[in-house]
Image 1 (spheres, rainbow, N blue to C red):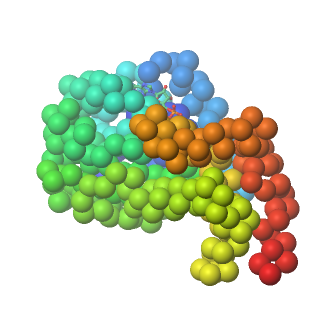
Image 2 (cartoon, rainbow, N blue to C red):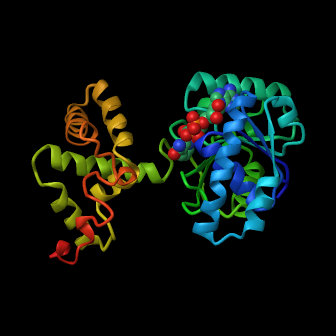
Length: 297
Ligand code: NAD
């Protein structure tokens, strides 16, 4: 693998996690964001990650301090990517921002640098042509809470060089990920290609009055042996994300999605039931009904 120097662009929710994870596994990481004020916030994000690595992974104080010390912050893109073998981009999921970022990056990055986007909803061929090196462009998609939800979906487009693809697969393993290579483009990668239709099917059963959410979850849990059903999982995701998805589909004229959006807003968002994050959603936490002994009877 030829990747030693890594730059993460965008130090928000995911960028900060990707940078810290990479540093935790021994890489020196340059972090780029638009100005010093945002970079100050990034420092706070990194500090907040330290106890999570200690709690969730059993990392020592020395290990998390060492990771923190391997991070160098830049608001100058040219400086940030000066030696980069790989730039992982985690800037906002807005096409114009991504386009402008890749134009700027292409102008200052060394020829050797591989560009990998963490975009959740775009596919590589949407952005590859904006760069000056489509053969060195691909997607490397992480999940929120990267240190224990350690999937790395790696997706190439038709023009991605095979060696580049393999290098990024190896790199993802070197930072503690389970590498999930994807040989063709697919919106939603693997996980959301499965998850989105699954959640939508469950929502449709409920909003169309076919069964209530507990019955749906029960069916799934008993029949598949899964520890939770789709509505318990919606509580994990948080109600806002499925609501925004339903709203977007409703605006495209999808009638079921309109019912789902209305239902989630009226019954959950307006009542402050946003999921596990605030202790209530489809279920009440910390002791949700689906964990009770009799739930599956
Ligand atoms: P975020 O809004 O938390 O962070 C974005 C960061 O990018 C901010 O720090 C912002 O200052 C910075 N930024 C804005 N313009 C920039 C520019 N031109 N150059 C460099 N940095 C710039 O967003 P996020 O949730 O971390 O999402 C970032 C990317 O990661 C998106 O593509 C998103 O789809 C993807 N992603 C997010 C999640 C998630 O759960 N949040 C999960 C997987 C993938």
